[in-house]
Image (cartoon, rainbow, N blue to C red; front, side, top):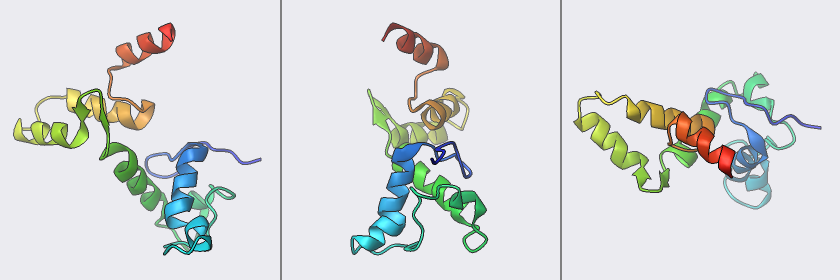
Length: 125
């Protein structure tokens, strides 16, 4: 069986994220008639290719940027919108570390909540 542990610069993980890469950039896109940057790569059957391809060394960066665009830039949950918060962070002189903490949470836990809120909400659900 395949392992879905993290690979690439942002650690692409899980069958869903590898499936999205395959659907948009890989073999599935090509087999369904869409333009594919990597038509011969099946990210679902060979997720290790992200870090092991000598032909496509850029894949670790492509996978990370794809995740960033797909999951971080489009993040808009319970009133926390990444692009609005990014503008506020820049306009505020990069001085509020809560933006960095929230983005780290989105990447690592899938939510912008502080760790204490995340742990508490997981313990009561």
